[in-house]
View: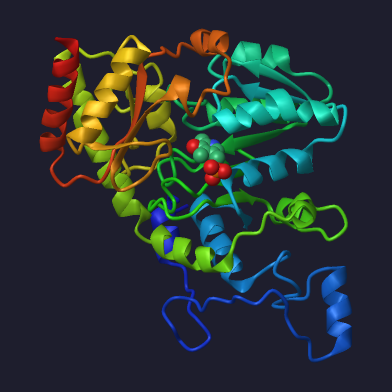
Length: 399
Ligand SMILES: *Cc1c(COP(=O)(O)O)cnc(C)c1O
């Protein structure tokens, strides 16, 4: 069998518009006409191939993007949503009923953590948080009513790597699903190839790469995607977090440059990691052999896309981290901002921002220092020059 490569899968897509336009036409209609009344009834009852009904259900522009994402993730189907959080929450609520149980990595995106810890109580869905690298503790946390294991391929902000094949075994032995957020590692890792049942994305980050919109995606089997879109009990259909088709069209175009961007993000982050190492700064980057999950990541990686654009350094205290970040912004290293996967470098103190929903004791338990600066390394042409600026900022604060 030919080895799966996600960039080839995207390149081989044959999608063009109704007028031969190389970019599929944008369909901005909310509703669609039927020439025969019976076709409308059939469409409501199930699928009539090629028929669109109403844009909360399906929209052609959203379908083009969903098909491209399914190709990229090697899944049968995909669904696009108005945000990463709606992709995550619709997936969870589709799988779990009241009285069910979830085993989740303790290190997840802050919004996901808050949804699990605070919001799911309303529905009497219990969540056990575990160190996802400790497979024994994952096994021990499983209960007869566990419906899913939730993790991120590369977790935020500590860049811990999930052992997807082993987690899939544990989930499937318990008749549970493995759900994985692949936001930090598009193209680099194809979670479905390791047994992940549902892959979720915040496309706001690397996939779109321009910070000009918020969007999400769910990639899975045709059955699961159809269940989300079911007019009677589909979570996506009924909660309705529809992605604007104009944005779908824009994201689809950006998807076609994702491989080039991932390579450059990864190349620049690796360079910074190597230089931080020389300087003796405490850092976290899964692309260097010092990282405890380096080999694990390599074992799951599609070759050629690098080790990702995320790197974290530890400045010890929040005061120092803040002072360095302000200096870096003044020196045009990038912007003091949350989010990631942008063409410019973004940095923030995780504990006080994107992970602030995680209580401080848990942050410490996770090994998250209050002085942690998370970088999303940009597409800088001359990363050496950027490194020199960062080094100056660190020295100015230290001395
Ligand atoms: C940003 C992010 C989310 C949430 O996505 P939105 O598009 O902001 O709703 C979920 N998971 C991860 C890993 C993220 O970085």
